[in-house]
Length: 209
Length: 154
Ligand code: FES
Ligand code: FES
Image (tube, rainbow over all chains, first blue to last red):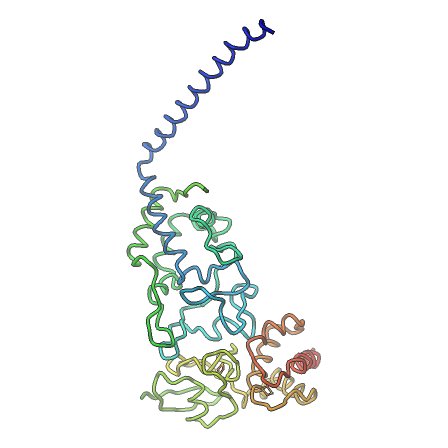
């Protein structure tokens, strides 16, 4: 027993030293990685700005995980029994474009834009209880080319700059009572700038908590 | 006020209207085509359904200024189409109508459904017709008539 202990204690000591060395080395490797990519922190901060827009009602109401779109700043279920349909465009006699025209209908309070439709389920940014997904989870799906229609960083930037339904969020028109719909929390230029910073940093995603 | 040339049931109709006027009121008030009904005015009931380029559309919420040269089909013209005719015949055969107020919209929606889905299931019918309300609750007969029209068309 005693002999065993004598043998084991230097072994534990050695393991401790090796373990500490690994820890120090891995920390240094991490800081090396950060210094090799000084944009990482900026990129992650920029992503949080992008995320704040993506989960705002003008965007997330059509990025649902459910069988229906949402509407309003309280993100309630779309009225009139509207459902997603096979391609996110409603169903034959109850299609999105059966009400939503190519532009906002200001006199009747119906928002509109070209080819009005829901985002595919692969781009859902909510859970099935309509709670927004975390920043890390949304980032992972936005950057997953198997889910995002094969868009790389550049294509994501162009999408945020130019896609008609993205642009609609900053021109959401008036409600039936004549008041303006709430736009996303950043101006479109700020959103594009944040996207560019994030893309130039290599589209980093925060760690899942 | 502005002047619009509308293509309604294959004919060109000239109307003077305020650009913000919903198509429903242009049809009913200017063109005196009262087959298309007003139920809610906020796209919640389907009574005002017409087709715009074949798409079942709520005419109560589409301002006339957004119509352009799209082809408008109303309940007055839908019978000229084989699917429309089959649906109207099935409606008569199954004696669908009670008060009738919602039925123009029901027929326009049913035609849109059958043009997209030749053999609709109960689920297809419930989903597609789910936005057309009927205070007289003729839903069961509507479903039977849609299936009957589908049979007639195949
Ligand atoms: S009157 Fe248009 S949907 Fe009710
Ligand atoms: S038949 Fe009366 S509302 Fe439908």
